[in-house]
Length: 272
Ligand code: NAD
Image (cartoon, rainbow, N blue to C red):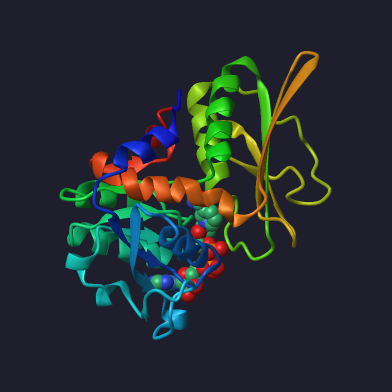
């Protein structure tokens, strides 16, 4: 019996392919998304946007890259996938709402105030914002939420490549929020002296410490460490390659039309 995301992909078969524009198409993620969309029989790559390569072909040689999302014909696109920077994503996602286009957003650094604006703006199309499209990372967040009530102490270590400009990662932020919501019994930090400032990392929701590592060679990794009397539990997920995000992104493009308004995280689409 096939369950989970595969079921969603199968149920979409036989319907017209979703027409997808990739915003940030020349970036590390955007170029991989163009390839994943172009390779998927149930999706059509119809647009690519990136000011850094406008006028060039996208990474698959399918479409000419536009300078701005404003140059995209909204009648030609069903869903826009945004992997840019927060400042750009804010404008791009609003443009999608204004033009009745579904938005699938992976860009990190969006604020709670952005989500409030998006919830008001998406009335005729839908929006999914996911801090992590890797299915294993989505499961890790769920497992961390389940473990939280049973352990009074926990810390998160997130590890990323050395070009990542924001910290902590969107995934770490979302994991912290979910753990803090799942328990309010967290122990307090015993540290009285920090010989090197920042040694104990940052303090997130629930007072849970988070540590951000930036290292050449890494992609995207996260550990959640739990501790209680005489035992610890470590959850770890590793994205070894950007291909780890592609199944979740293509799934989102196919399923977004069935999820009204603004959805946060891939969980709902995965049925977990
Ligand atoms: P990157 O710097 O390689 O690419 C970003 C691209 O966006 C660049 O090519 C840039 O020219 C382009 N861009 C900037 N402004 C733009 C605009 N107004 N319109 C169109 N394009 C514009 O970055 P990346 O590694 O591809 O990551 C992109 C974002 O995705 C980051 O916020 C990162 O944290 C996030 N990310 C999310 C996930 C996830 O699963 N949700 C996974 C990996 C990365």
